[in-house]
Length: 585
Image 1 (cartoon, rainbow, N blue to C red):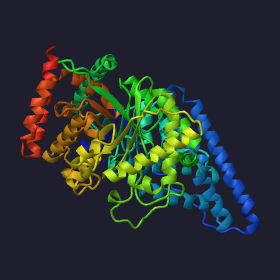
Image 2 (cartoon, one colour; image 1 turned 45 degrees about the vertical axis):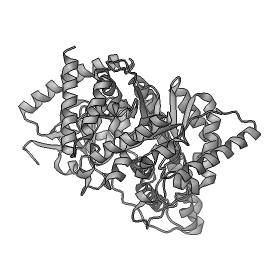
Image 3 (spheres, one colour; image 1 turned 90 degrees about the horizontal axis):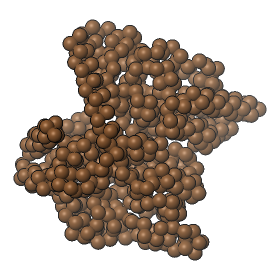
Image 4 (cartoon, helix red, strand yellow; image 1 turned 90 degrees about the vertical axis):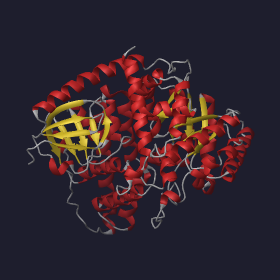
């Protein structure tokens, strides 16, 4: 047991500061019977598996019945787990292994989960890598029922604990929040994982991605959690606790102030209105976006449709999904991005080219869509049919050339003509845009601008590809520098091309959600910013402190800087000066 104070860091997933005692939740390990069955036992094993599925569905329903205080956001997350339990990828694959490989139900389920987990883990899109925890949670629930282990280890967690675990699924997080725990800390996960969203929905501080925390934390140990900074302190001393309590009081006061002003327009001191929108992956995030003052959806990622199995090949199901997006975001607009998947695969069977050495440079985004034209056209049809229910904009990802843009527009024109012949109404003037996230697109932005209605700059990929750095590779992560001189020059080039062509240009990467970056982004000429909804109130507050003329002068100064460190220091100092100005108002 570590008795000295130790500070470790992860990803701040849900804000708040708490101090409490650790309850370490160990990984669930199964003793899975590996057995073959006889042909005359097939029906019995199928029945056992189906009964376990039904029991799991009933348990999820019980959680939903007790989760009223989570609102739509929390409930819809749990609903997604119910959908996974009924998904043919899980159920039919397990059935096939029982029938064709003569495996016992437990063994068949375990192999199915291993196959699907590997497939999701190898996708380049972060969203799907983070869904592996949800898949494992659903599988564990069914496995527990198959093995007759009905009691969950969660029943041992005492109220008021800080739960530390390797990972937590949304249903587990929901069960824990009902126990009135103080905070969640996990070794894996990201800001978009279901556990993080559930914690934010229930307003429980959470830090995820804390590598090795389960190795150093012990039951009963005192722990301090700062869900905003992503900081976890084991055995905090008295002075640290006093300091954290002061910080907590300041955060509460600051949040109250920001919340009270979040619905006000984001207008600079010299009267320029800035559009502040949200990046969305789930329907349930839209209400959170609205409550934080977002003025529309700047990026709705449609990849998560894979989780609903048949939806990817069901036009009517997709229409219904997009209709809900538009209606929930009304009266504001919603920018929906077509599928941005990674690696060589068909979407129906999730066929992966596991031999690919560098999938990030392979078949993904619009490249895959132009190869899988049937799936792409089906999505375009669904998007267009839903466009009558609100203000929709359509955007395609991972564009590298004019040829790709023109081919996508040709397919879009074909789909429009099909819908006209079938008497399906749609918005004839739906704006069509492209993501600028590849250097080739940024360099030829002046050419591309003539073919589209708007740009959206995806800085997460643009920084990565411009600098040749994989930010998920710990060996080179420090070289991922969004304030690198090359990045600022690239932003300026794209914005100038858009202004020259008289089309709108937005930014939707994580760079836009960092308050200290706002002056340089405004100074670059960007007046539409899209970000994680949790960042919106603070970003809007920063915008209100800015003067566009001063920001443009500041950005020109930054362009003359030669190093990232110099730019970073100037950006930090400028932001501090802004805050000091605001404090004096």
